[in-house]
Length: 332
Image (cartoon, rainbow, N blue to C red; front, side):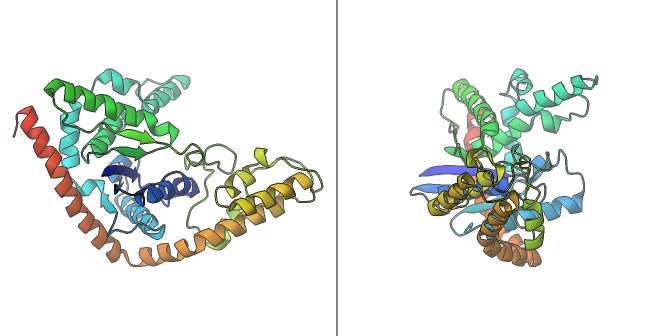
């Protein structure tokens, strides 16, 4: 059996990029033969930025409902909250002792914040808490605790997997025993780079995202905001250089993709029509999932029951790893 693991940080309703870049590929991977899938809600990771308790609770439900609405079967796939598995935090403490500070200094997110501070003439560590600085260690604990073989990630997350590999390697070498599985990243080059409304990577940070389960009218309004060039209706257009088409092809069949590409190259189609084609396709794919999502959000007791069961199953797996490590390091 190969173990795969992935998590989503609860920062509000997942967007189209989360679905295409993480949720859909992970659910597809979970259907492969000889795969055991573990998916989690990374609520403690959110604590670095979300400091409103009620808001965080609602975000957790939104992420859980999104996984379930998109097709996750809790009878086949383990779904749990990070905060429900205290072994993760014991694991983090153990890993801290084997993590070089210099490794954390090289973390992309930390370096980017330092560079931003310097550009503003601020102290390097302005606004950086230890949760941000040690974020990669907590992520390594999430991964290593569950004997993970593969982690589906985007290219911007590969460094975190490499850090988990480094930390696990240090610990294994110190005790001359394969105590921790060395994880590998698994990347879908096409799906992991999903363009937002302005052509940059879709992100809530850029405010260029399309909420996954937005009501139909809101979805249409958002799609109509996609940035295009100034070409007129009659001009032929290059589908390879269009944000609308880039999103369309991620949902379309080969026949639908070829048909729209032909319309682009022929001319006679304005950007408004192209956006309407994208909206119609997105809505047809999302509408059934949206209905399920809305139902789950109205009945969060069902989500609670699934997460409670998931926590018990997750803790049984985690306890085995902790027992193994405690024996090896000399505290158990």
